[in-house]
Length: 177
Image 1 (cartoon, rainbow, N blue to C red):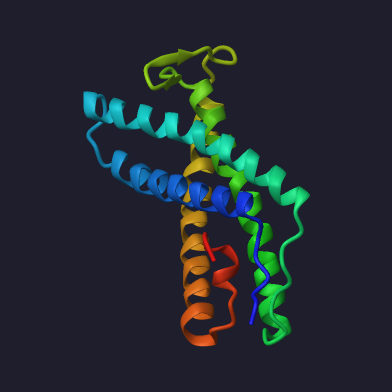
Image 2: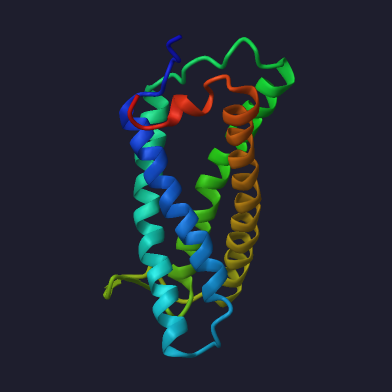
């Protein structure tokens, strides 16, 4: 039986985005444990910001591709509540794909450290704004942690479809085949 699949361009963007985001979440959790005002902390924060900018580009590409390509239909074997849950989980994911990087980017532009893209200093938007920067950092941290939880649910749901339901939902987004 042939499983309707996403187009290859969207599959590549999805998995590239997944690798970047998983790396950024892990790096984010690691870097905050490094003692403040140390070279290692600065190095990992700058690495996080640089890969965060790359992820923002891939997210924009993914959003454009997703807007231009209808997803393949979900299997008829899925319950209506599962389809509704999948829909809202995707909507929340797309929202967090905007909030997490934009809040991090805005926060970095308003703090005294700025953004270094692999050593290249990017011009800040304007003067430092400590209060707004702190608020945006809070948004970034909490939304990133919410996204990590949602990502865990996404992975578990994909595994459920692959190992228990065996309905082809995961295969729709796998490369090859």
